[in-house]
Image 1 (cartoon, rainbow, N blue to C red):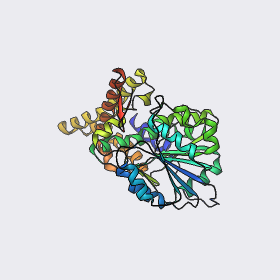
Image 2: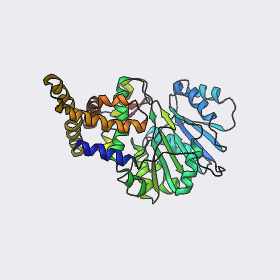
Image 3: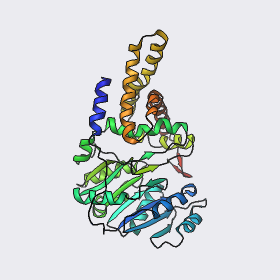
Length: 359
């Protein structure tokens, strides 16, 4: 069975395309939209990166979402009069909205581009990325292009769980159905990079339709398919990098707030997920230890196969291949976070993110 999983992961990944620079006119305006709340550690790097983008027609709109640190001051300092930039000072968050979703809604209202690119402040884009995605969208009449970046790791928990985001897509998502059908259930997206054709975005209803969602990227992609437009999931590992968290506690909080939500708050799905990963990806570590103790290397075969499967995913995502050796620990960490996410949901405890509480 594990050998079948390896083969499936290899074949499934063939339907996740790379993006490449294409010839053609690039005269349509792209609005790059960045929500920022307490992002002083990322401001300088972010603005410098944006200024190095080579696409000829860009506007940059940043929503300073009531930051309590030096984000606002640093923004104006780093922009330094560049006319392509505009900073919107945030308003009080309405009670029915999630903070980031509300910020994105305000940003799109101010945008004037034919294309809308929502990115996070901790993202680094390759300088030619829009010369790649604009022609790709035009050629294929797609409403949304998205994908998972190459993750930068700042702590031990990052190294265990962030590569699993790519693994879950490469293993569990039928990518051919995600990319070539409008079936909403076969959909994945990542909020670090959401590139919309504006008319398709407006037809779908925009961020208004996911205003209270903590998993807005996936739900907005599903809404795009329901509106009749395709969503294209691409491999962005060579074009985008992202440093999501600064310490293990942030990683723990970040994943705890949406892991159970990713299973649609289904206890049945959660139990099946926990059982499957416990048996398939955690238990091989016990067998490996047994093989070492009793000098029976047949017991090591399941561990070798899950490492190979994980390496397939890590190779595509540009993660260090030796991280795959920790696949049982990565799976265990993911399951512990899921259990915490379930506990928070069951006890109706609030999630705290960027200084805001979400029930």
